[in-house]
Image 1 (spheres, rainbow, N blue to C red):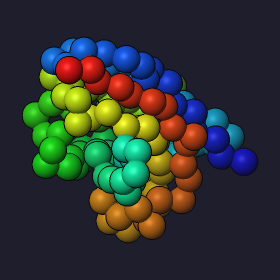
Image 2: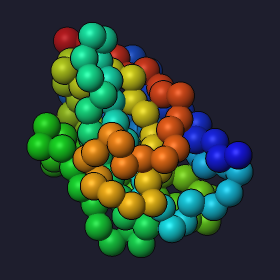
Image 3: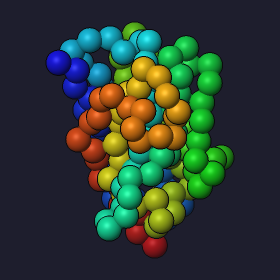
Image 4: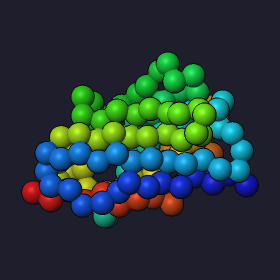
Length: 123
């Protein structure tokens, strides 16, 4: 059984930084692309970033380009999201997910999901 467990969320002031991590257990997902999504209260779950299996390609939502960086550590079977210059509108529950195929920004492309970690950015 594959498990994705997010960590690193918390409360930060606008302009600050947080680093989210997603630990994968149960099996190696080295051939999977890994993504991050977020969901604010009352809103849909939105794509944030994705990194393909080789780590050579990354994709970002326009709203986070230049501020967020996704990376993965194959040895540790983890994927991280470094978030800088945080804004109050970045407040959401952040989810880690894995996909074997499909489009990076498509919710339905992802096979496995974590439980999420809360990120709150105060103004």
